[in-house]
Length: 391
Ligand SMILES: [Zn+2]
Image 1 (tube, rainbow, N blue to C red):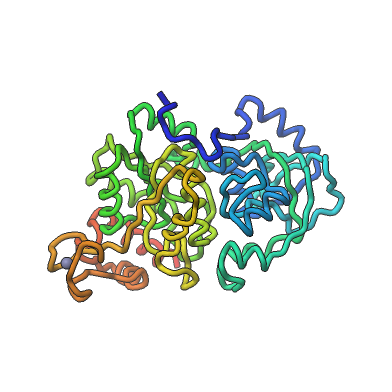
Image 2 (image 1 turned 135 degrees about the vertical axis):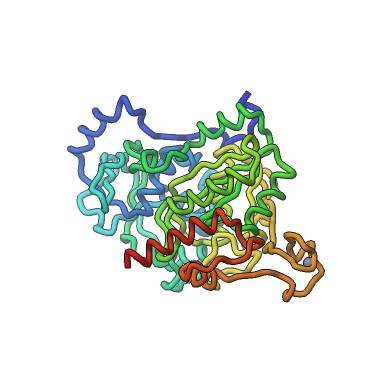
C-alpha cells in the first residue's frame, strides 16, 4: 500500500538509527573511541540523518559532495541538495585520520549521540559557502554566523545514530519518516500538503493550510522543534497553540501534526528546497511556500524562496511547491484573502506585525478574532504572563 506514496528523495529512505536493542553494546564501544564534540546544529543534523529525514544522506558530507552542493546544489552523483550537511569540530581535528572511528558527542549535554567512520578530512572556504548558500557574507545573518563559528576542517563519513537527544520523550508528536509514511498509507492519502512552521498559527496560516487541504487528500502540519533564535516562542507553547486550533477548527481525519528536530539556518530559498526534500522523505507531495519562507531580516526577496523551485529541472525534485502570498482578513471582502484574490487597498486589510502582536499580548490585550482564534490567543497570553511573572 505504501508503494503508492511519493518516493523518498534519491529513491529510498536511508535511516542509520541503531535499533534500541543494539544501543547499549554500541554505546559501550563508542565510549572507548576518540570523542568529537558537536554543536547543537550538528547534533540536530545527526538526528535528522538517523531518522531518515535527510535521505539519501548516510552521514556528514565529503568534499566532492560539499563542493557540488555549495556551488550547484548538486551532490557528486548529481542528486539535488541545497545546503551542506557537514561536521567541522570547533576544537579542531588533531589526531584524527581517515579510516578511524570516532564517537559523536553533544557538546552541550556530553551525551554520546552516535559514531562515525571517518572517510575524509577537508578544508573549506567559509565565505564562499556563505555567499553561495545564504547569498550573504554578513555575520549578522544567524545562519552565516554559525558557519563562521565552525572549525576549519570538516570530518566526513557514514554515521550510526545512537540517540535522538530526548526529542521522542519531550514531544509525543515526534515521528520519523517511515512512521509518517505508514500513517499516510493507512489513511489512503496520495496527495499530502506539508506546512512547515516555527510560529503559532494565526488565521492567515489557518487559511492557507485550508486552501492546501481543499486540493489535497491530507494536510501534514510539521513544526520545527530544534533550537530557534532568541525571542522565538518555545516549542512546547507553540504545540499547545496548534492543539487548541486542531481540536476545534480542523477535520481530525484529514490532518496530521508531527514535529521534527531540525535547527533553522534561516537560509531562505536554499532552505526552502531543503524543507521540500525533507517533506518528500516524509511522504508529502506538496510543500506550502509562503512569502519569505525560511528567511530572516532583509536578506531575501519576498518570493525568492518560491522562484528557486522554478530553476530546478523537472524530475530532480518530485515534491512540488504550493506558492502563497501573504493572507489577511479583508474588511471589505468580509473574508480571508490575499493580494491574489482581493481588489481592495491595504487600509481594508487587518494586519498586525509580530512586534505589535507581542506588545499587545504582553499587555494582556487580545487582537481581533479575525486575526487569531481566541483559543490560540489565550495560550499566548498565558505564556507572556508567565514570562513577565518569571522576569
Ligand atoms: Zn478585499
